[in-house]
Image 1 (cartoon, rainbow, N blue to C red):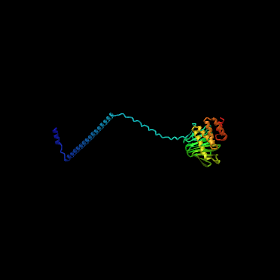
Image 2 (cartoon, rainbow, N blue to C red):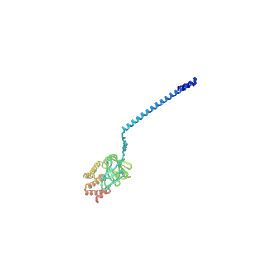
Image 3 (tube, rainbow, N blue to C red):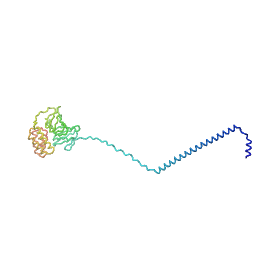
Image 4 (cartoon, one colour):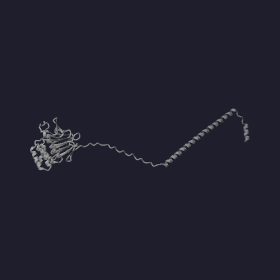
Length: 321
C-alpha cells in the first residue's frame, strides 16, 4: 500500500500556490460552518432541555395541587336561599265612624231620623253632649263630623251640650257656641226656647237673639214677628232652677224628687211661663213611678188647660188607657 501511495504521490503534479490558497480557504470556511452549526445545535439542545425542565416542574405542581385538592376536599354546603324580607306594614287610617247612642240600644248616624211614641229617649253624642227626647217627638241627626247638629220637627228636647251644638227647627236655628243646657219645644207650630245654663243664640228672619240663662225665648212661627211678652225676671231664675232640679232628678231615676220639685214650682208660680212644662213632667213622673191614677188626673187637667198643648196626644193616651 505504501508503495502504491508513494507512486501516486510521485506521479501527482505539484499544485500552484493559488490553488493551494483556494483549497485552504474552502477548508477554513467549512470548518467555520461546522463550528457554527454545532453551536446552534448546542443552543437548541439547551433550549429543549430548559423547556422540558419547565414542563416537568409545571406538571409536578399540577400533580401536587391535584393531590392536595383530593386530600382536602370538603363537601360543599348548600347556601340557604335568602330569607324573604318581611313585608313592610303600611298603617291604614280607618276613619272613625261617629255615631249617636240611644238609650234603647239603637245607634244613629248622620241623616238618621228618630221618633218617640209614648216613652222618652236619651241620645248621647260623640262629644258626650246629651239630648233627652220627650214622647211624641221627631228628630233627625244632621251633622256629627264638622259639628254636632240635629233638627227637631215636632215635640220637645232638652239639650245638655258639652261643646258647640246646633238645633234646626224649621227656619229657626238655636245655636250653643259652648257648653249649655237648654230646652227646645215646638208648640202649635211655634218654637219656644228655654235656657237653663250657659247661653244660646236664636237665629230667625235674619236676626240673632242672644238668650242667657235663665231665659226664655218666646215662640214664633217662621215669617212672623217675634211675640213680645213681659217676664218677671226677678223670679225667673228660681223657676228655672226648680224645673232643672226636677229634670236632673228624672235623669237619675229619682221620680219622687222630681215630683217634689215640680209641685213646688207649680204651687209657687202658677203663672210661670214654665208651667206647661212642669205639668207635663209631673204627669210623666207619676206614670213612671207607678202612680197611674194621679197620672191620669194630671193628664185630664193638662188637656183642660192646654187643649192644643204639645203633649196632648200623650195625655189623651193616658186618659183612655
